[in-house]
Image (tube, rainbow, N blue to C red; front, side, top):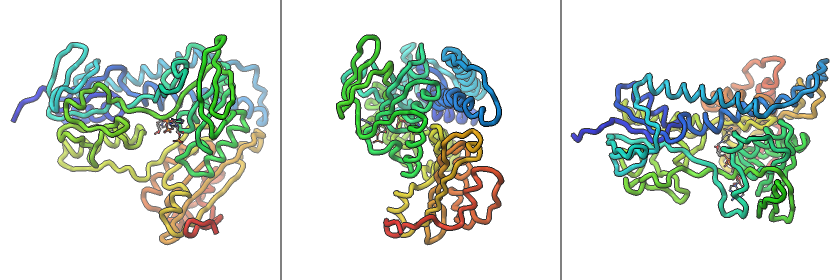
Length: 461
Ligand code: NDP
């Protein structure tokens, strides 16, 4: 048996990397972990966590408006962007500290350096030039925003990375993309008082979500005053008189302070020594893995966004825990990517689990669709024009709920709980015999007794 410096060496200190390193170390393995930027990864440092803090900040403008209907007179309000950034940075630093502490407590060796593979068992630490060896290696280097370098003027645009550190809040912003990040940031910036426009290439935003929610959210965003341009893309960005002039494929010309590109993310696999080690990547540069997160090199595994699977923090963490079971607990465990609940933190929110109506119609010959659209109670006195949509997609053959979709306040929180029922294979009858919690919006989920319509062989009947 050759001897190695480490039992496990992890490259990348994000959600998947830290979890695998910490748990392996707590099992008594000798673990090293290297991170070139900050521990916590995209989620903690420049993703989910600071984003959610921004979402909370941006909701206050609407809370102040709503308050009047409930008898409150709210004095003049002002917003201080720098104060928000400072508070957010403090919280992120605290969380980063917790990540480091967790690793430290488990006795993993924390290395603040970029690390690259030299061969299947050797890693070079760039800060010192030192090489170390490991029996098993995990690549968990995550991804980064696609900078869209083919776009003339892309160098004047920002990505979500910069959005977390802008010196000043812009007066106007154009956000390109129709996915999670574009939609969430459009709502954030609008809520903070920025004149916001979203430009998306497709016919409707959020292409992977249920059509009803996509339309419902689009309408709600436009009602608030967010401009949405569909079926168009930016063709150039120029810096003119301290602002930006944007031309689009449909010959629109827009003047904005800031352009943010949210056009998907690219895996961080360049110059990582993957080729030298024999680790195969796909045409998008993502590390190819088998069902157990094992790469083309048997002792090298890859977790999280660096692979081409589902780019979500809980998924990376789950993949890390499956890696631990497989490699260190003699219990080969495949990550389960089926029925992942997810939320878009737009305003109103989207919460969803399972198949969209469109996808379910392709898979099952007959569906029952239960759909409720209503004005949430809070909006009655606040006077807000907003509607909530709830939808259950049921396979008529066995009555299983195969998709559940919500647009409205706290949809993300509801999606987490719905995720349990749908994952457990609950039927519509299980929903029907569950007592409602009254008065809540969520009670609609258990009180939709007859189908709003059916889909038979792909046709609505
Ligand atoms: P998404 O994949 O969600 O969206 C990318 C968007 O960019 C899509 O609308 C896509 O259009 C569009 N696009 C891609 N390439 C081009 C192009 N060349 N020209 C014009 N438009 C283009 O990625 P995001 O960057 O928004 O987010 C990355 C990932 O991070 C998400 O997939 C998600 O998994 C995760 N995330 C999760 C969040 C959450 O859980 N709440 C929040 C933020 C991110 P089309 O749809 O037509 O392909």
